Image (tube, rainbow, N blue to C red; front, top):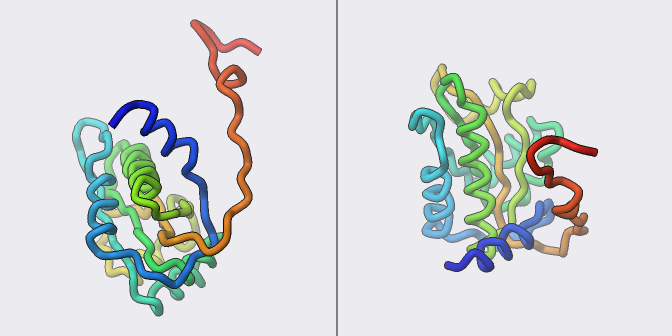
Length: 169
């Protein structure tokens, strides 16, 4: 892969909240989770665990529990990213989540990241998914094939966000 290929995936990846009912193949989901497993991690802790939910009833339960993730019910798959309570669990889990989002896009699967950490529903979702104590929900990721194109909001230009040597406005 060339840098241009990677940058194209980053540029084209977007959040999708409207999905076809077409299932995401198990092999594709395994590749996507494997990308999460390969994420950067502080002190090589690798605190993550990934729960893939494809069963419609359980996805509906998750969706009903969240504030802004109601669309999880119609997504053919959802990955819940949990991390052991380590010093840098949020950074590690976020890195794994980002890898999952990019890997999904590279495979033609659309996604949307739904916040987990510090949300009131984290304990409910942990119980729902039978997660043992000592793990924090970092994110929920809806996955599937886009049913209708999502509105695209342009990213800020490089010149607007890049600073050399010190922050300057």
